[in-house]
Image (cartoon, one colour):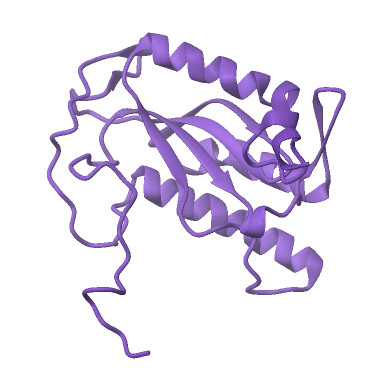
Length: 192
């Protein structure tokens, strides 16, 4: 089949007019390739990480040391995905007052970015760097250079107020206790 740009072009799942380098809080979910249970298992409502899960956790924590523009909030490494809250810090007035943690009027009217290029100091840049660092370390151990570790893309939600922030923090922290019902669990209650 020949390439047809009308049929075969990637569509972004990002909010169309939001600039993901703007100051704000973002809830991020990144899933392993094929939803492989690569990072560990949940036993009695607690996550027990494998060596690869420890790498995913260590690289997440290291991200704040590497990237001055981000501040990490709560996160969890699950058997085949990671959930976390990432704060993009900056001087603009839209998003959050990161010094106090108070959310302010995120309205989503930032300039449209039409290319797939990731602006530096953006959420996309952070996720790409994180995924690359984890994949490189895991593939070095497995001896499988270039093998995918992550699904293409990631899920994000712009956190717009304190109520959402607290609800998402609770969701992340409670995630292992609800693994049996988790959509990402290939052996969950609704898949038996």
